[in-house]
Image 1 (spheres, helix red, strand yellow):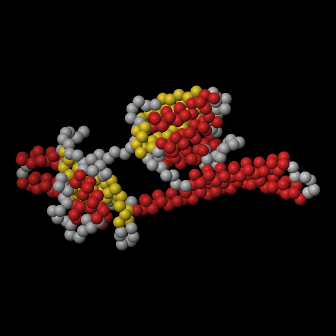
Image 2: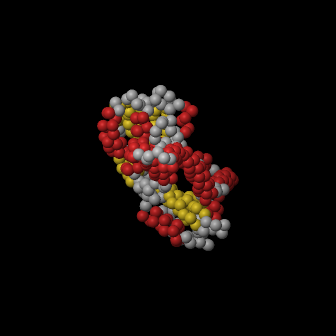
Image 3: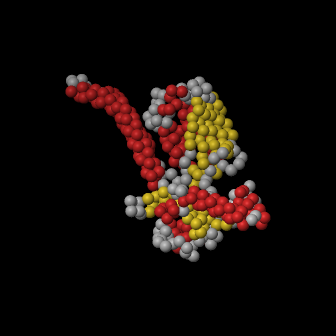
Length: 390
């Protein structure tokens, strides 16, 4: 109720007939304004009473939500007024059992083709008490289609980059193999005797290059295939600690002192332990290669707004500013060895975890990599409560 209406109701007993009529006209005008605003929304909006009966719906709800014809004024709960069984089952379960799954997407058939609808339930709070439920139905088909197109474009661009990288990587071992095969052919077609030393050297080089080609293909397949990640709630601190313990001898041999600064609070995130450790291993290895003469490495976790943060900081050679945009690209490397896929795979694994990764670095001043893991999603149940609303 608006402040104007509250004040008018306080004065109503002292108002004359004409003043009351004017007051009633103002209240009706205000009510019509609110109703017109709701009817102007592009998304379906429905208000349910505590028994889940429809007490208000806007015009978009009739167009978006699969209501049966003549549903207005019915004394049946909302799930009994729908002709789509899946949506009805979702609403009956969520409203009837106070399930925490309060948002769901459905693909429904329409005259113009399939549409994707997002249904969200929210408690209707009035006077500090839950007086019913609000249902919001949004057509997200266009957004989903654009997201799918963007993912396909990104996948195609990544695949093109990977293919170009593979072609570039394969040329060198193929050229080396070709040279040594030609040397063997010359010896075989000449009158020179073929010694085991000459034959052994050339075959050893060819065998090494075959192994190199195989490694390139294996890395390529790992980069392009969908990851079979299984995300479960687990301890981020435990994963970091176990990785640090595994790398302790190698870090000590490289004269790198590693320190852990792990949060003492809740460190639960959705993770796949195997893949996450692989990503962190790639990041740590990259830091170690940036500190050939030793240095310091810190792994720290802490709770921040929006999730759990993992920060990896080294005192290595750093990354020049002009290369910062390329570090996660496939086959990009500034080293004389390595496949150039380590950071690419780490980035892919981080994204599979729904996390965000950020790199801050400056040449000769070290590098800090920050990964932000979202907290496991917990939707509130529709539980009634009493108390003041702040």
